[in-house]
Amino acid sequence: MKIGKLCFIRICSFIIAFLIVISAFLLQKCKEKDYLSEQIKNGYTQSLLSVQSLVSDINIALEKLRFCADEDMRVSLSTEIARDSAAAKECVARMPIDASTASSLNSYFTLTGDFALNFAKDASEKGAENLEKLYVYSTKISHALNRAETDFDSNVKLDFSALDTALKSGFDESIEDMKDISESLPTLIYDGPF
Image 1 (spheres, rainbow, N blue to C red):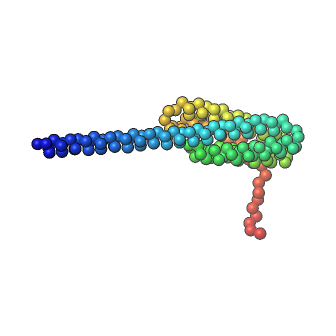
Image 2 (cartoon, one colour):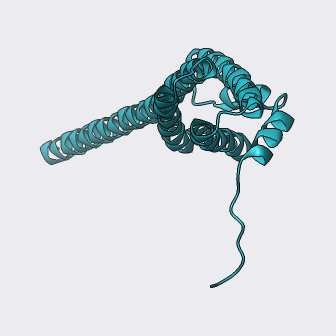
Image 3 (cartoon, helix red, strand yellow):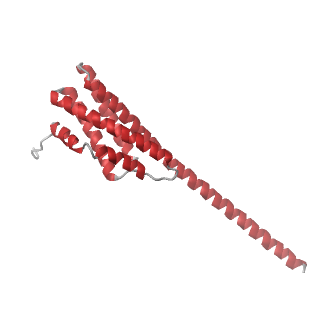
């Protein structure tokens, strides 16, 4: 009878130990999941804030470039815009947005950087008009990013549809103006191999 009671106590203690180990393992996995989820959200937030800051810097530089008369200052501002545009494209690649929105943003940043470098060499009246269009468009993107940040911060879950929607709303209006600007830039003509 004592052997049965001792065996019962051992079985109960093994079951309790097994449940404690399983509980600790599950608790650790839940904390790990929350930690990784928070890391992902922080990475996306950092990318969003970086793009937001870079667009703001581009916007300020475009505004300065609109009123700049000195050629050296124009070259300095143009290189700053091109550098910020390249950095913004890298940040967009890390953002969880729709491919078409990312493509539109990348097109805008590429066009802005190329146009700024071209404008530094040749500040024509047509270039000044296009610069004004880029500035207006940059302002729209900046406002869309500000709305997206507000929507993104209010989400508790990892849901980026609000971010994508806010960014898309800024693009739909000025796509034709962007095409006009890109057609005014010089292009290379490929005549084939030597």
